[in-house]
Image 1 (cartoon, rainbow over the protein chains, first blue to last red):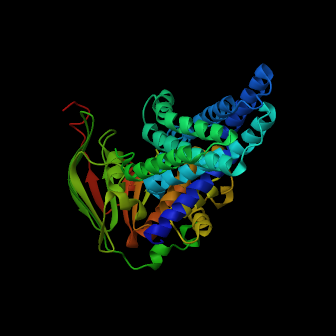
Image 2 (cartoon, chains in turn green, red; image 1 turned 30 degrees about the vertical axis):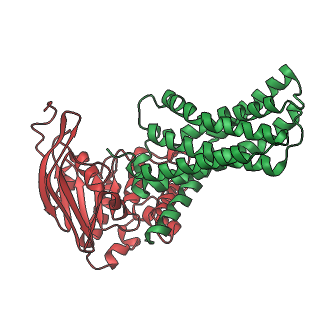
Image 3 (cartoon, one colour; image 1 turned 90 degrees about the horizontal axis):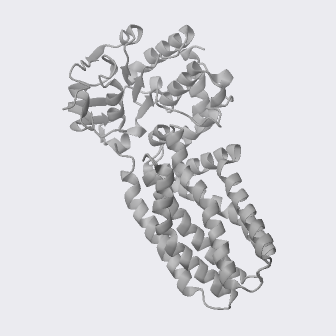
Length: 224
Length: 227
């Protein structure tokens, strides 16, 4: 056995790889998320055509699509362990913190893949003006970090409750409102040549605060 | 597959200072008493926990493994002179229990390799291969879990428990679903590791509890009634 720090790193890495392998084999989350984003963007494109320089609507639409496309899959990473009865296996091989951090990294990766498909499609179908790439990508990264940190924590907390499906949405959506508001404000600002400093700071602070709170809570999860 | 074909780190090591001390250990699920107060001390060899259905055998093993916090009493687990709290017990305990499930979309080997890697074992692939050979499942190692029979799944649980040759083995109904050859392999394996490992079997099968030098009988007579 390795020492505690390298053992935790090994556990986080192992869990991340296991999540990727499971997702690749089942395509449980990514198929639904991509289907949602492609269908929504195509429908909106047919309904309202190209939105051109309507930065306010473009920003809101982008983040609403990303949020709702990813929400079901992000919540499912812990629920799948409970419903597949694999939580005992996980608890016997890694600490709750390592489990949650492995899943958080996977959720970040998941959002990255979703954005890789959704964002170019969005820019083309909506006829959005070219973004300021530095600011745009920074906002996408920070928004994804805040979204992943928050949904991983809520997923872990509600995984063993009875009505976890409805609870996840009921708990997550109010918690994610500040993320959505800041990400939309920042994305709109970068299209109108405004400053993204305040929304970016807000997203970074939110992600860090949730991560810090998570690290304090994770070791007390699943205590029966 | 004979257990002797897969040499274990456990037998190569000298006996480790292993002990489990339980004082007034009891558990309730809500108001229902699931485990009557138990006091015992184990320090090596094979012990069997027996008792009628619902008497708390599985609950006791979950408490010892650190998965369940007891409602009353305490457990003191010492390995190599160091006391292991509930959070650290997974590093010294190998657990096989009927409620242990694996990832259906992954093979038996991939499940065990993942477990070995997450536990921080130095050579996860070798550890997984050795564990599967030890329990006679090397030939089906690459089959997905969804393609394995219940007896083969039980063998994967036993292989999981043996990963890294932990100093304490907690085996809940270890022979369930196993055929005669599987039972023989199980018995050889337990006999092989017993000199250097504390083995706790939760069972009502006479063939299994007869292997034990010590028996903890749970009566369960007061169970099932609200307190």
